[in-house]
Length: 211
Image (cartoon, rainbow, N blue to C red; front, side):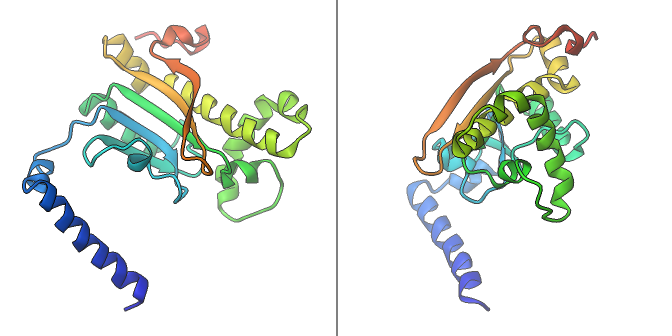
């Protein structure tokens, strides 16, 4: 058994002991069910842990992560998580959280083949295509990269809002707001991008579904 593997098993035991020392009913209460108020759609990057960033406890955040925090309408994994969060758990908030220094976004700015992930990155390139005139006008590469990360997160907020799952919830009078954030790896702080949608009236008319 490798030292790393043994270490993470030992870490689990220590975590359980510490949690029980603070609250003997901690796990018994968790086992009763979950009622998280928030769905977090973030990047798979190991440096962006959803719960820790916002100081949330187990049971407070329902989480979906993929490369570059993408909302792809044909992604049944994401749609299943979204449907369960909205229609079963009745979350009131969804946060799409990108992060500066995102490798997926960086890869979408270039042409290097990485492997099967190239097909996923095509979705990020589509975002670049929508904003290429503005992004290409930014001469500083780091600034352009950071701006692309922000734009990508904003676009995923709109793509979430366009789903039938979210729009049906709004049609039924459900309280549901979708927000766009970016996390700073070098600071720990999140930036609210100012994209906060709680009605399909915030979308172009062509995307407003009629039920």
